[in-house]
Image (cartoon, rainbow, N blue to C red; front, side):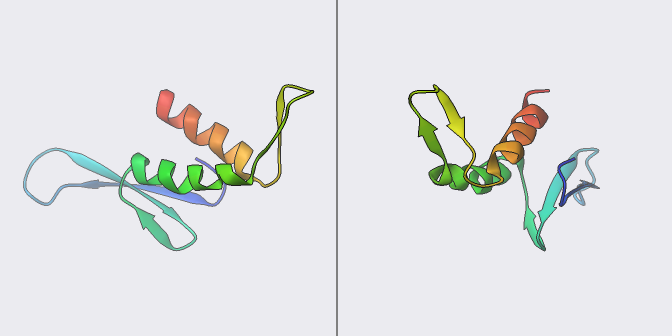
Length: 75
């Protein structure tokens, strides 16, 4: 799990055996990984692209966070 984030697995109350996972960050609840991605990718406007080095320069701490979220959702 990412630093500063918590995940909680809850069984649905409708009697089914299905579970939902809720993500928490800075006292805010996100009901799905889609909501987490929306929150994370808002920070992309804070990135600068260095055309000469053909790389991305970190302007904020979003890079590490994005990499972690992407690895969580692709595994």
